[in-house]
Image (cartoon, rainbow, N blue to C red; front, side, top):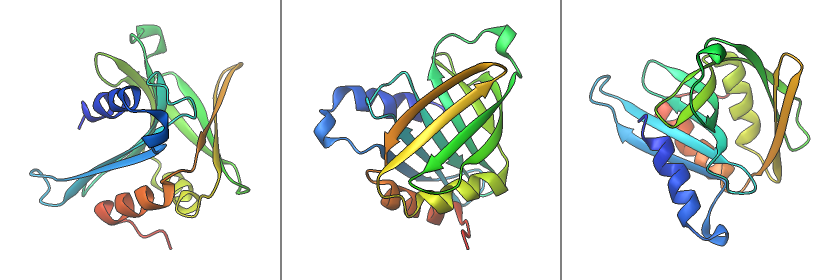
Length: 167
């Protein structure tokens, strides 16, 4: 599953922009839990492989991360930040994230706050136009946007695989 993000972002770079949905979900059987595991990648509007969002789950765990391409710097290890998500006209959801190495190519700001992740998924399941993303680490602020293209279908597949109740 760790290599999945690289593959999803690489496929984004190779496909024409007109054929690419901003939201992509992959569901697999999980030999360790006997259930399913899923990953849902959210690409930015520029279809960049440099950064994006990643939801992941298995039978026992749920996580959400801002992922960016680049070498991991020890100084950034365990750095806390806030990830802000606003979908269409919904409320801003602020998630606490902690930076860590994801793999040899990517670093991530990750949260396992199930309540906040579910709040984002609830909004995403009815997303129609755009998603605004902000990352605030100290005084540094970064923002980008992405389309809601394929969000409803991807979220439905992810929620089903993860056995989540969005209420």
